[in-house]
Image 1: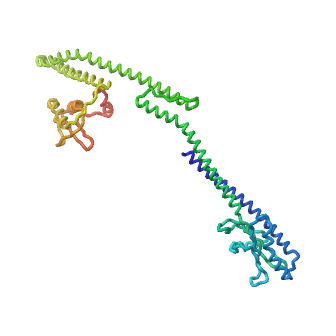
Image 2: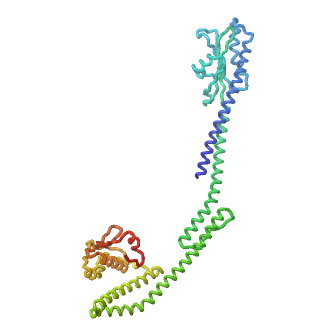
Length: 430
């Protein structure tokens, strides 16, 4: 589109320049021709008055009357109009002012007439004349002339430019038609070239979308040996390399998931035995001295944490293997929060932390995986209680037209920006 627009602008500019130049050339040629014929006309008028006596009024009047027919019948131009006007005393009726039938005296403006009377040279100017109801340009030529016995006259010749106007119109129509044809040709070839250049890019975009969607076997067709073919070859090499790396990463991920799953299962049996032993020792801790009692409590706590970590590890490995799908059901979020608070209340009491609850009075319906939401709430509440430094922990439930939310806020030491950046990393602890 830009190519066609720029080409069209260039053609319009070029056509305008050519039309202007041709018009000026036609006008200059016609003006030179008119001036040359005017000199011949002056000579012809002089010949008419040769041998005429200024004292013989009848002979002089006859010669004056012959000027217009004489000038109308000579010259190359067949459309010349003539006026031979007496410029002496207006009261004199002895001298006539003959003119061609179609000569319009309004063409001779006072300013132009003053210019003619002020010099012996030929004066000219462009005018508009009517021909067949159509206005066409013309050249008006004027010159002073003295007949025998010094009687002043003015000779005016009108040369129409009808032929030149027709020629210029034909040239302009030809330029417009040629410009349109040229523009159509440019548009056609621009479309072909653009299609040839854009097709590989379009193919590359299409293949890229397929690769991004997981179809790693898609490749670009390689045609010829030009730059586009080199680009397609490079793209295919890049796709091959990407496919190999993705396959290697998938294999590595599969091995990693299998390793985690195997380790988790292998650790489950000894962990169960160790946990049973730790639970027994914990139940008998009152029979130990203070140092042993504290060691048993720490071992029991860390054994519970190790058991929880192992469960998390198993669940994460199932998530990584896409073996777990969320089980979404519609529940009342207030009930889920209440259940989580009930399970954590004893721990909060042991830490001396007051749980401040702010929930809406009505039901807060939402579609969630209850088990995982309860686990998230339990983690948030446990962390908040542990790090609240004995200050109250606020639990708030809110909703609007499109979403629900639960916030757990403690007043403890908090986390800095570096710690916040790692808050959602696996197994990270502040």
